[in-house]
Image (cartoon, rainbow, N blue to C red; front, side, top):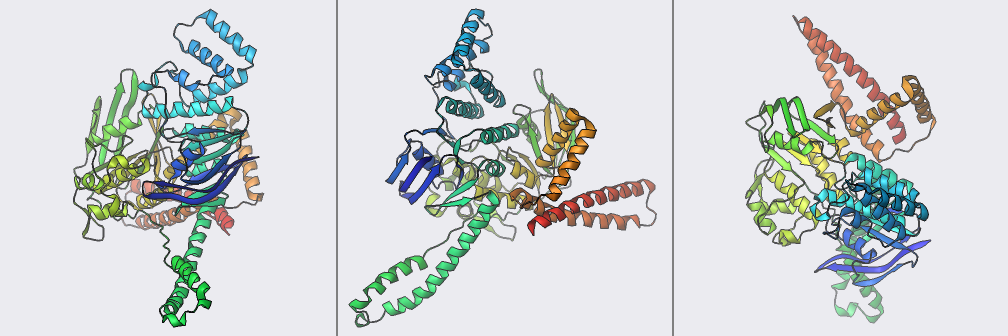
Length: 630
């Protein structure tokens, strides 16, 4: 069934064209991801399809039997109403019955008579199957206090309530629903993101979504649209295919422009001749000249944030936490936490919302005091803190003024420095935009400015709390490339699994009740370890082992194509294997040192054995991925 058609639609914001003469179709069952740089009109296009904005030119047609459900970045609520009244706002019999039922069971003093009547009504409407789905949605999104007024909620709580409202709303609609979602994974912890991923895969919905989460995008969507240069480009397949096809498109465009330039030079020479040489018979050639000129002067702008910072000197002592305790009333955050940070430490922090991740970061930076224990920070440490609170400004300011208040110049690794204006330009804020008020920026542009300001302070210990929210994929990719080469210490709190996998070496897992486990690996490795642990509990070690052998056999015989995740893992192995081989070589040289102590000899031998086992496993994995690549 045909859901949506857009024909030659155009939209301009102020004097800036967002998109021009774009045409596309959405059919039933399509699951599409929309990607583009911040400020290019992604959210505007979603609002147009949802009927909350209009086009300047062109036409949008939506099938009369299709209902459009929109999940926005900035949800709107009836602020004085409760959570339950906002979620079940439909005047639908099942919605009314569920709203009444949820109010009763959320009340501390339940009325047995009212509860009985509510249950009878749900029976009469046959609403129990849908009620189970509502319970799942509310439980998985950690929405429990349904009688609270929406105006009392935090930003993250509001986003989760809005997401629950959207998912429940589409259950009340008839079967033809177009679900439009703008950054649905923001403000969700990793477990919630994985649940939403599974939920959308199980539901029979047609989906158009903007997201920066590449694992989420790859697992949920089967088509990618890119909004670029005021046009829209469609790519079937996964994210890796999109990157390959986009690269080929840019190369083809560049080749076409080069060819047009050569023709343009010849035609320009002809055009410059005396008018006598250009008779009426050559009118078509003159018209063609202007088409060639337009193509030859076309520019392919593949702008990216380029970071070349000179990090502040990092001394021998970084940070040390000894027997740190912290709690709020009966809620324990840390119980005797011990850790000594080393140079170049790269740690990811995971845990459920409210487990104490943000408190830990505040303790480390001295923004909060521990109940007991010691926290010693090195004298040379300069923290750079990218927080969820965003930019802190007392009054509205222009971009250039805000950055100059931090510093006039920025030191470069290659020597010398650049001005605040040049630094803004590197972050895709051209000179003509630098005198814009910060309030006029989009959400993603504000995040980009926030990241710029953190780095402009030249830190050697970066703390990034949900840095990927609202950043576009091109900026994220370059930020990851920069952070992978960053020589300072790095702590990341993020629900973006790909971002974590690429950048961290180990995890602090906040398990609750003050317990923090140190896991030696990235997030995907942690999830595999947890799944293996669950399998052993459920089926016992023998069954789990048989299942692993069977799975290995299937993997061996199946013909696989290397996907985006496999490519990234292949790249990681190619970096890690040489490092381990070098370490093994250096340790072998230490073994031959005359007069080496017996204890040192034992430690070195044990480490060599450990590295040998790791290399055996990694090399086998590399061979498997190498075969896929070929």
